[in-house]
Image (cartoon, rainbow, N blue to C red; front, side, top):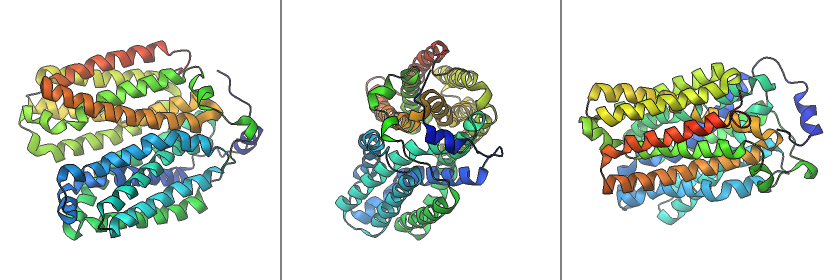
Length: 398
């Protein structure tokens, strides 16, 4: 695959340090942490928020839906339109969106205003996710890009496995608004860290900007995006309806423990991915898909056995934890100079997969029953494996 020559980029990457800039990458990880925690926090504080605003819990759940909608509709056009803005300034603007949105959520008593703030936060989230992989990849030599992206992505599972339980605990102790206020303060601190600890990168010159069509038709891009769509769809069919599924093994009351196991094993998955992704990206993609498929197959026959469920959840987290890093690295290596636009496509496809997973899972749950979810997931993962296997020349190449 060939990509457009960018002399400015060559100049900026010609003196990259050989040592991994761990602190800067962890600052990027904090941006991901804030993004995921802002999205998920209403789930942990659902009852509190609904009572405080005098609305139903189902309506309160739309705080998450509106957030996802913001990311879904805004990411691609926003990233395409901002190719001419310096990268650090754009990242700072996105984080400022979290400061504003979470502050409004902290102070407002109006559901309409809070929903607007959540939509703004979703827009910011889409922009952050589109930029993180590109930042991480530009900060290191090519042979370290996968490891750098893995570190930058660690904030996501940490937000779910540690941030959400802690936030829920603090919310129950001091009230739900204090949680969003704390997130505003963390986002404000993050802006300071980004300004002084994250390197700046020049925007694409007019000559080297990419249209959506140019990026989408690059060899390998469609294969990676198809894998993202199907893999994440398979994950969300089960993750969205984990509580009714766990009831098969009488484990619904232990959902918190199950999700903790999932989150911690996800962190281990990212760690493993960071160690090997720069050398074995293709192999790891095949292994992750195989482990997830094997988990689905196991749950197809043993979903009513608690011990099997616990072990399966751990392997599921292990396979899914590094998926974001895996797909973003594959896309960054495939897209070259068009990484930011390609990552915007990934963010959009990821959110589409979440939406389809919720809808399809709900239909299957209603029409057939929760026991049908694992075999459906298994079939989807077989398709994923085939696409990765065939993408040897472009997409998943090493």
